[in-house]
Image 1: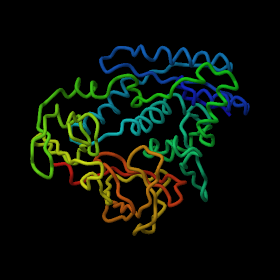
Image 2: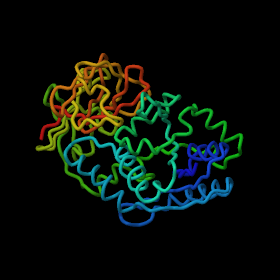
Image 3: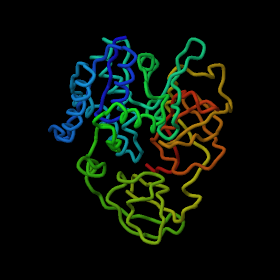
Image 4: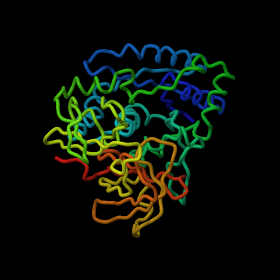
Length: 359
């Protein structure tokens, strides 16, 4: 097959190239470049690009650097800033996959190939005549939650060659074939923000607006924050308060107030009910004949655990998750990702709504 491979300079996408080349496929490697939000180039990308060129040369593959700078800032970061301004918690990685990697890239370059391959830790499975996104062998590295807004058309064109490999095996493979990045650390940045500090990015675009930090139970002022947009429900670090731990449990957007509660096990940071809007099913609604307390598992953040629950369709655009376990930090704006009861098939996601944001 002719396959477009999205390569980042990291070890995962390098092993993707190795595996596909071993299988005899015709590969063309692509690096998607995004500049900084001031319009300048991101010099931190140069090392990544050089690594990609080395891998392309090693395997005899054509390689192109393609720019989606304007598309990224006009779509993904516009979404992130708009969501933060509303006091909600965005997930730029999810939207980047949907709109940039498998959106604009596919429209302009990827569609010319039989498939597009990435280094995501995910798999696919076929049920009946439908392809479903499915979880990776390595539950710690599973990235299906970052793919939970892609379309069926996008999924049908994707392959995930390392989804059946534990991360340790990926490293071993890279070492065995003498990849130059075999020991390179995994990227921890937010999608293409890379080395840009997230709070610095928010400060540059939304500024600082001092407001009180209030203990929810007592109404006592504990300190000040620089703007509600720097804080998310369930947050513990970065509050600058003594005598903790303290968790953000509520925000008043109108009055710029952040409410906190004290203690590792404070009930205020937990809940069992998640209300969802804008539900998206990647391969179609598996409960098209009715969704009344069906058994599922779900994630409300990137984590290795799948939480058992039931899912109900309560109105035209509202679904409700009732978790069997307490859920920490239910943050409106975030995505709840829906899986089957066996935590194998990823059905899609909905956007969490809630009462702990006061407009």
